[in-house]
Amino acid sequence: MNKIAVVTDFDGTLMEQDVGSTIMKQLGVEQESQLIEVLARFKRKEIGSYTWIEASTPLLEGKREQVDRLIEDKELRDGALDFLSFCKGEQVPVTILSDGLIYYIERILDRLQVEAEQVISNPITYSDNGELRYGLQNDNAACKWCGCCKASVVRKLKQDGWSIIYIGDGGSDYYGSAFADWIFARSSLVRYLTEEGTEFYPFQTFWDVLEVVQRNWNDFLAGTAPRRLNVRVPAACSFPDDET
Ligand SMILES: [Mg+2]
Ligand SMILES: [Zn+2]
Image 1 (cartoon, rainbow, N blue to C red):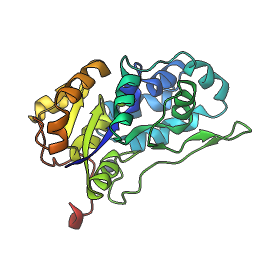
Image 2 (cartoon, protein in one colour; image 1 turned 90 degrees about the horizontal axis):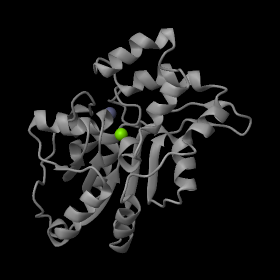
Image 3 (cartoon, rainbow, N blue to C red; image 1 turned 90 degrees about the vertical axis):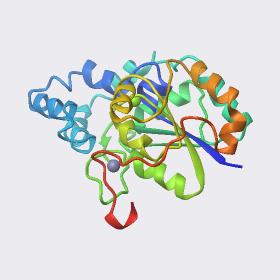
Image 4 (tube, rainbow, N blue to C red; image 1 turned 60 degrees about the vertical axis):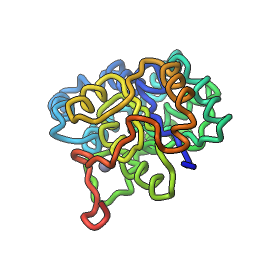
């Protein structure tokens, strides 16, 4: 029987909103003159989030209270709690994997009383005196593309013997889902996987995810659930030659 683990993205996936992007927009970071070109290049995929986060995050210095206010009303995607409780009941560990900032993710999960096996994202946070602390969750020396190198996290779970159900919506999930066994996708991840010819399950709410997973649970456990993938090569994110 397969050991199944769930890996879900946070912004725009577990959450109804893209919290990180809302913060950057609402606090005027994206509109700063020195970032306009960087953001355009990031959106054109000429640079990765590694460079974008490095350039944009320092502009959140001194804005802790504004960030706190902005995240107050952000909500989980419909069905998320039921899906998480299904996972708990089946003893399926859930990893919340994000290329966002641990600061807002932890506060939101705390407020919404969401429990997960692990939360992995960029260790960018405010210290008690409000000072911004910077870091990237990327221990893949070969990858200078991702902030949080999602592909290397999922790859490690696979190496530890887990079969992965991956749930995501955006750019960082192109790489994150590369080593997954099954993908649930919405938004731009749908477009990307469709162009790539990779199979996936579309979803809008976690009720959709739950419906598929519950209906096919024995097949997931047996490893025979449809749309199972072989490893894909993650686009711009790379690994040491000898390890792929
Ligand atoms: Mg996302
Ligand atoms: Zn990477």
